[in-house]
Amino acid sequence: MDKELIISAHQGTVEIALLENKRLVELHKQKANTLYNVGDIFLGQVRKLMPGLNAAFIDIGHSKEAFLHYTDMGPVLNSVKKYTHDVINGIQTNPMLDQFEIQPDINKNGKVSQVLDKKTFLLVQILKEPISTKGHRLSCEITIPGRFVVLTPFSNTIAISKKIAGTDERERLFNLIESIRPKNFGIVVRTAAEGKKVAELHEEINLLLERWKHMHQQLVKAKPPLKLLSELDKTSSMIRDLLNKNFTGIHINDREMYLSIKEYLNNNLPEKNSILHFYKGTKSIFDTHGVKRQIKSSFGKTATLPSGAYVIIDHTEAMHVIDVNSGPKVQKMDQENASIQVNLEAAEEIARQLRLRDIGGLIVIDFIDMKSNENKLLLYKKMKEYMEGDRSQHTILPLSKFGLMQITRQREKQEMSIDTAELCPCCNGSGKVNPTILLVDQIERDLDFIMHTRPPKDPILKAHPFVIAFLKKGFFNFGWKWYFKYQKRVKLVEDQDLGMIQFKFFDGSEDEIRLNE
Image (cartoon, rainbow, N blue to C red):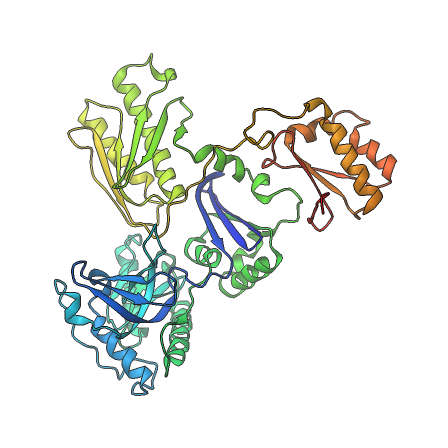
């Protein structure tokens, strides 16, 4: 399976598209230099205890107080509290934990009032982004992730990724990690560690320990709220977590980010340097790689399948409901065969949609009814197979007696929602536009004004693909006509974001030329 990352950076926002075999499967949007990312570690302060919810509200400096549930505190809460207190007050001067006394685990069925007090200083890590009216969700189970391993302070546990199947390899990695693991630091071995030598793993553990030591220095005499350790930005963390031999390309349009990723690859994966490409085209990078078209076709209430069948995705307060409908093309087939074919096709698309939209919580799918138990079991197995590539934790149940499949999927951020229905950019909802026959005249008038008042060095005209196709039509087209008239070549660029009768002029630096300024 070929994988590509398409990264579009513009106006302080970074959009990341993950393609698998040229199909869009994940879409992420992030503001540059955000202060509160999933994985960031803060020194927070308990503001309120909520016995009814068995949770606490924590101040980490955000406008909304963060939420810490008892189940997210983890068994090591007492150790976290003691470490935080001792470091701030100068008792724990050594960043390593070999002399630190691990405290007893908390009662997993206990109450928040038994383990926390108001105004307690606490080391916390962001678990989930704010969703709806809720603030960030926190955890006291601190993790420092690397490419091959994850460092877990206040633990002595070694865990091996379930995706590493070979018994010999699992035993090799366990023994290897046990020999180099620092005392009172647990290690989670990731899938990427399979086949790696002890030197590579030891080097990464040392790098993660350096990050822990840096956090320790920040914590000395600190006062909350304070960010102690930043997770990598979304782009770098995705490269760290996803990059493998199946990746065939990383395309990016921002020079600074390109150099940053290049440095990361040089330091960590020099063999993958060749797949990194800096995009220099004037056309949108998402348009060039077909991402924009897939976004328009994938988001919406209805998703159409190649067979003509379609799925309807609806959101309620309690859950997401997905309905599968057979299209006219499959009506003539045997009902049972048609049902299983449509259901299997729909299952693959639904698995993609869950990742793409980042749908979390409870999901109920109403597949087309089937009588055969074999077909029901096949659909269940295939659904599990299609969901294997999903990095979010999920649980899938077999079809119920009513023919419904239930899925729970971990939610880490607000669901990705893009309204594909657009207000007509031509008429702004009025239903009337200027005569289309005069469009070229309007373009030429504006171009003439620009060329005689403030002529740019490399003028660019962006318009709808149909308009650009018309302007380029024939040997002596408008491009040549304008070249002879102004002695400058006007670059004609397609832009799918523009309406049929919309157009914009830009200079060579991609700055828009506004005629009304």
